[in-house]
Length: 464
Image (cartoon, rainbow, N blue to C red; front, side):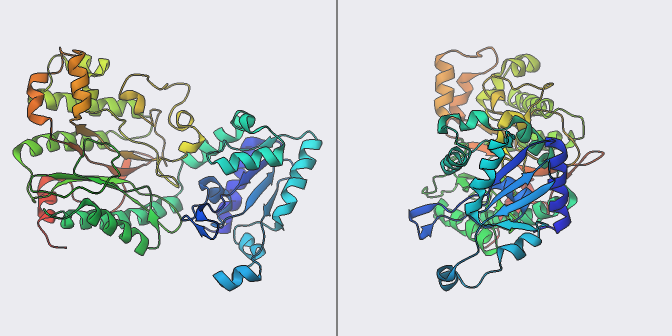
């Protein structure tokens, strides 16, 4: 965990933003896999981690804004817990490490909340994303379950987003640690990708790298020869010469900060001419959009720059035609680039998405589009120093989407459907890096992972 001063400062800043009432911030509980003693991997709630720092199940925090006081609710392990799990530090001692002096048994939480409600004080809480959270709010705050989401505090939600969006130096260092794990995951995958092995062989190996580093994967590994499936978690395909593999994966380090990297590479160790042509377009879009990152730039505009570069590149290959700016404005490029350029990243790989994607990625000045493709852009607003985001353009040939648009004669003035037959089994290419916005520009996080054609081909020809 960070120093106790960081957690104290975070809570004080939140108090200054919320101004009155009390803040209820429960941590996560363990979730049984198939019976209570066999739970899934425990993942603490990210916002609880941010303000309270303790990576243990069964905890809740209350911040009394009016009294400038913080109470941690939880229970020390009993003898049975110690027999099965070994001796553990007392909750009081752990609380002191994050600057909390007041610790109370979990059974006292409801009494504190009941008194606050009786005194007509506002109880602020964040929108729940787990059913057990909804049930806990409903029970302790005496709210009907179906009304819990509506009664979540907009004031608290906006304050948390504003605070968590800007990463301090200590957080950037943790993200760099997560990136170092991802470096090993991705370079290992490139070396392993040979004809005759299964996708699952690689996916299992790189997940093991994350576990061996003391962390976990930041999200289920996306690794497939079917790169046209944007989030393909199926790993049962046998790799063949001529295939390309998309590896979209990242790690959480021990403190749960995330990395998120995508590389696309050839199984044979060499890109075909057709693959090289598409790859170079994506790489150009990625490099030029990264170079555009600086404070004050709207990420929506940077996304549209990527779309423009992709459209021009596809025009050079004869797959698109017509006026580039009009094609992008109308969304014709989304046949090939149907997702957003990137998203915020931090304690969550899609940072704070549980608090509301539009609240995190948009504001009064920049509104979310409802246009196909552009609607999937998670981050559109102006960038600020301390933001960490991904940049991940791609080009995909999705047979079902191509056939649907062709049947509808959609954007025929911009798309040469006759030429797409040669690409119908191409798959897809995506390239992604993690970027921190600095005071005067940006910095790519971590040790560079091979992404030029020459670098990728060289490492793919190496032995594991």
